[in-house]
Length: 286
Image (cartoon, rainbow, N blue to C red; front, side, top):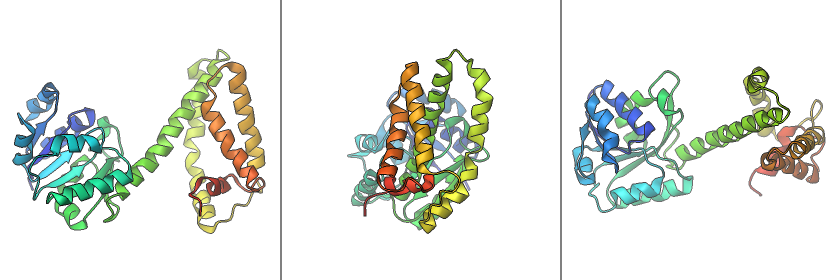
């Protein structure tokens, strides 16, 4: 079924989504502060709105692809959004998402919060998925339309859940990218070509999923057997990574953060437990 929609925010992600909506037969009106960013998608068949009001009035379904939720207020405040469904795929904190849901409700609109879990080139491709949270009935109404940009996973009625899952994924992703670059910097400090080290780092990265099952079991049971690798042993390695970083002149802020985590685990009396016991240091107190 063809569903007209408006998309506001034409960075790489917004442009990729518009292309998919159009390719799947959904008439799409677009608006962006820098009007020229719409040129490419207009050439594909999108309708360029001259003003925010024109963009909002064009469709019941409004998709936002912005920097953060503050940008939503800047753009939509003062507009008539009663009866609209706003799908905000911008990034922000769970707390800000809850405030945004209340803001929309005060103006007679429904909010679906979302997080796109692939980069722009992979939007709508196999394996792409998008977290959503908010009213189930509203999600179900627009599910088929939203599915063209990625598998829509509805996490619950609590508006904050999509951002929570999105940020938890990005927490892992950004930390991993930082570790990747730090590893390259460490070997490069000895003159090692990046390409020589890359296959070993790939093996390391590919093996990470093997730890998930054990981690989930330990966290759920609250038991952390340290027979094979405990916090004292791994903390010593963390010390060595910091020492190597300092000696080579590589920035040591990231390994020091990891070192601190292990030291706090030891200070908490968990030195002879499995590294997963560090969860007890990380989780909220109480």
